[in-house]
Amino acid sequence: MTDPHNVGDPTLDRYIRQVRYPGLGADGQRRLLDSRALVCGCGALGSVLANTLARSGVGHLRIVDRDFLELNNLQRQVLYDEEDVAAGLPKAVAAQAKLRKINSQIEIEAIVADVDHTTIGRWLEGVDVIVDGTDNFETRFLLNDAAVRFGIPWVYGGCVGAEGQTMTILPGETPCLRCLLQDAPPPGSTATCDSAGILAPIVNVIASLQACEAIKILSGHREAVSRSLQVFELWDNRVRQVNLDSLRESANCPTCRQGDFPWLEGRRGSHTVVLCGRNSVQLSYPDRHAVSLDALAQQLQGVGPVTRNRFLLRLEVDKFQITVFPDGRAIIAGTDDVTEARTIHARYIGA
Ligand SMILES: [Zn+2]
Image (cartoon, rainbow, N blue to C red; front, side, top):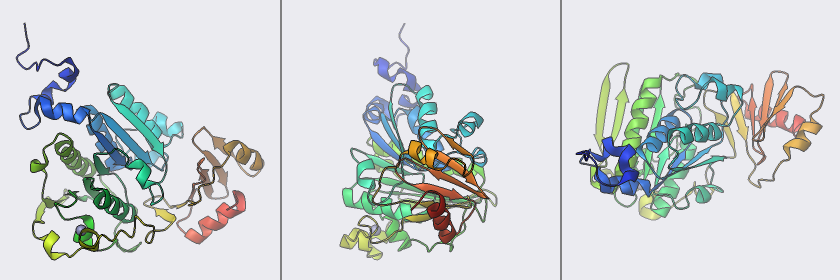
């Protein structure tokens, strides 16, 4: 006999528990299946976001992450396991493999790359929503510029210690990140997961809120989207909802009101990033010359132990670990000093 909850469409069967939720329904589920999300960064927040959106049946996930896995990621980055770490996989690649086992009916793209003003246009092609899995304000302000410029909703999220916050930006309708913060805080001025640590539960809370906002947007229910900045502190048990209704009028935001997009146009932002909590510096090169990892492995013979797979090459030398990607980007671990990182890179890889 028929299942009372059967909606008569076998493609929706696996989602039946959420289809039964009246706010979403079968029509909402079909829209989800027909939608595309950009998961920008696939560390702590991004893991939970990608996991939840894949299970919920968002039809196309594009996951962009520049980083590779380390053992201390596993405390909070729920998509990964010890085998992924041992394999030295980039996060985007490990995420894609795991998510394909979870939901083989959706498309999952893995892109191992940095998100900067030269690449963001590519990653945004065809995307209906952007979810923020990044760990720095420079990238968030770039996302904000691009989202407002191209009219794509985005869901900001950030966590440090036991505290996190999230806000949903519907361009032209709700305040943007720059309405709220005016400018990216200067490097070193805010607590990071390096200085303040981070607890896994806050990541799950914030990313779950972000995922739900994305599901509302993608299923055609913008009316349900939160119009507040939501702030949670889980250790001292504080919850705040900051109403943002009047902010768009009062902020006179350069981005929303004057069409100023300095991060998107490359007038703001750098090509060197100190990686949060990692004692590492990333160097990237805007001209993006491709690197032959084979040739580089040859060049480094005798310098120090080299390991490589098809996604990256890694050299251990002195106290440093240098990881080079085929697009020329490099991560120098063992220092948070940009100049020292440049020196080491120039010495062994050649700038
Ligand atoms: Zn604004």
